[in-house]
Length: 74
Image (cartoon, rainbow, N blue to C red):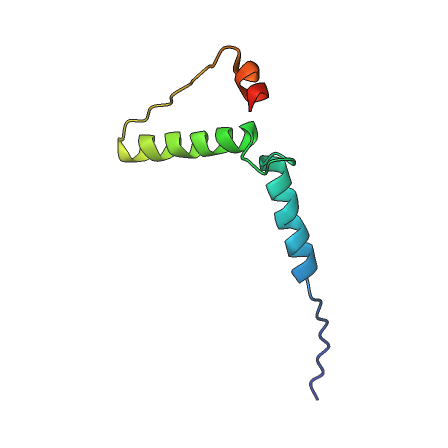
């Protein structure tokens, strides 16, 4: 005689919470825009792909002086 016991759990809610936490870690809570951590992760991935495929990569950094003044007029 063979006997089997099985236990099932629905982990859908847990997976949804994990996705939300991952999003909060990489996006601004107010605007939902990607944050620096998200940028760094994507930059690292892009560099690895470029190295692996012998591609070139460029990063543009734009610094706007007195941008707060522009923002405040809107």
